[in-house]
Amino acid sequence: MLASLSAATVFGVSGHAVTVEVHVSAGLPGYTIVGLPDASCRESRDRVRAAILSSGLIWPNQRVTVNLAPTNLPKLGAGLDLAMAMGVLIASEQLDPLPAGKLAFLGELGLDGTVRSVSGVLPMMVATDAEEVVVPSVNAVEADALGRHKVRAISDLATLVRVLKGEEAWPTPPDAAPGLPSPPPLDLADVRGQSMARLALELSAAGGHHLLMVGAPGAGKTMIAERLPSLLGALDDDASVRVSSVHSSAGLTLPATGLIRRPPFRAPHHTSSMVSMIGGGTRQLRPGEVSLASDGVLFLDELGEFPASVLDALRQPLEEGVVRVSRAHATAVLPARTLLVGAMNPCPCGLAGVGHCRCSEANLGRYARRVSGPLLDRFDLRLRVQPTERDDLLCATP
Image (cartoon, rainbow, N blue to C red; front, side, top):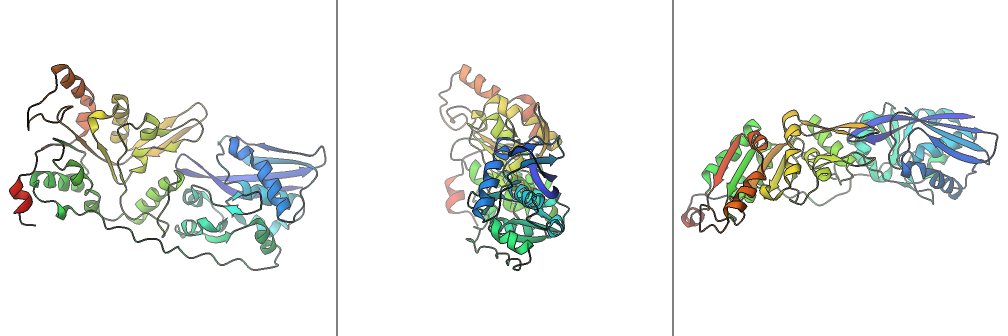
């Protein structure tokens, strides 16, 4: 018998609808998955079998073939486990196909039959056309944040089977966890002095201009840059879904409400690699820091210490607003519409212009070449930040 169920997977930062087809027929017992599954998806044969048996159900002693359509799309992760298990139960005539055929299923299965959380639920919900979607209880709040589907929260496979058989009602979705209140954004009003730097930050926020600050250590470059998100205002609904989808696909924790409402602020360390900054990988093309900062601020402190190749890789994304990551098996388009703020010392020792510089001419030349001319051209605003005078700190009007 054949069963066909709706599910979804994440590739890059986008969700894609997947049809899980399960065929159970006579022949030598076996379990085969086709349709470009990755290693974790292929390993579902052991998880699905153990979960069905642990839930008091019967594993068919027949040949089981699972097809994940469309077959040209890579299937990543364990989020298709629940749909595969339901397909096996329907194809082996342990479940009526009519109720389950109207649903979409997202979730990973444990060996004891529990339905575990998966990353990228929000972009999966965007890609799903089914009116009702069964998700793990842990992901119920995130799945319901979109507001387009009827969310059914399930904690284990046995409960789901009893519900579909009509033996009990759907469990009540859990309420949002009362997480700790988010700290208030850093306020530019807290900064005394640095009137020119404050003006540059306001112009950057108002016009979306990339900003480069050069100054001695302790002049306040980082303190000023951290206050830029508070000038950008809250995200609208579309931007909130975009930002939350990127963070969800990267496996990052979302707020208790399910959606990110403040512009993100990302400040990667200067030892970050090319992949961590731009995104990519071998099979799962994950978003990098420039994508995680989309619709927000990407702050590169100690800009001159970043590898030159990593900095130059930002040139095209900053101009086009997207990152196109191409691999032999697939290509992913990742968002990169971010506001770039860079901060760097005037020289390796940091004393140029404010004291006795100890750097040689060769060191100064190498330091200057770290930031190429085309990347400098992306910074519409360039500012030299001088240390704040004592009177500005102690006597200035707030």
